[in-house]
Length: 421
Image (cartoon, rainbow, N blue to C red; front, side, top):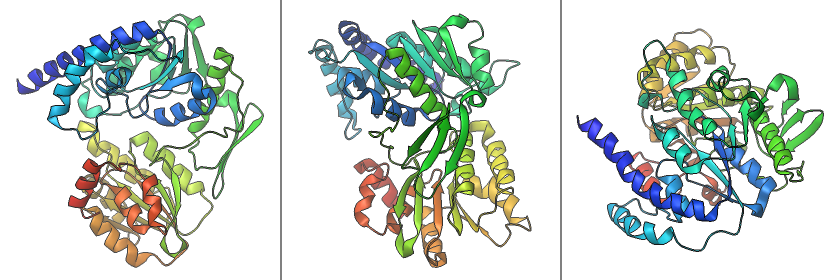
């Protein structure tokens, strides 16, 4: 009963801000471009921003039921205190009638963390163009599949609300069956499918950059990017063609958000790869594939829990263990109760990793162990939950680089301190 009341109040309160955000959005009347999917959205947003530049407004740090209306109204949460809600409630009607933006494009990253969120946000945004990048078990804990279907279908159905509300064009990842199934009943002429077999000719990870060969053109990025990012590069090109915007093939203005495969110099000349922002099953595998191809040895993988998987928690962490058996890292360190219970035993009981795998509950424990094992020149990957960015911070050769790590706000600093990092 309590959960039902909370669920009702969540969208009831959100509808208040949605109403006034809708007023401002209709007054502004931009061409709305929605980026949606279970993973990769923020990187795609930054790729698009590198091309459109000042032509558009971008929904940085806002992709949810409350975040997007707040962004439209120009309301930014700072300390997450209760009194902010009261202030925002008073300000919302006033912000709805403020001066409108001069930019005529609004590029929005939109997530679906819970049922009804896609429907709610799609009704507000009514996009002109939707880029549907991915669909997987993100926030699976919040979704309940209908009888006879799987949770992936339920999640894809929620994302499909953006496509159904799209006026002009849908750019979709044609390699994801759930996306193709969800779009099956929409007009075919409105959809452009991006399929890797048709555009990706080559992919190579180097020590400090990534090379994609797409449609016989080479793109070089000074970051470590998973192979899956190729679809985002291709989508960016398709979007530029639709908008008739000349494309900068060098992506010279592209910057990577914190916690998404950033490279740092660590103590004892180690290479620290920080992918600690989040970890879903698909993104975890993508980063492990990248780390396998990374041309630096020895390799140490520090892996945290994959959270919000609900009843699939055990299954997904066991799958991770089975996948790791196919890798050949020099050491694997798990951090968190889920990897300890479901993933660690699979490797600890294998001849291949029995002497090379370790598990800890807390990040401070993992850090204390790791610093005794570093000899120098190792590549160390950090991926998963449990405040792994706190371990990265303690290993930085230049402490000033900490400002480039994720979750720098005070609320996160206080939480990390409780975990010893």
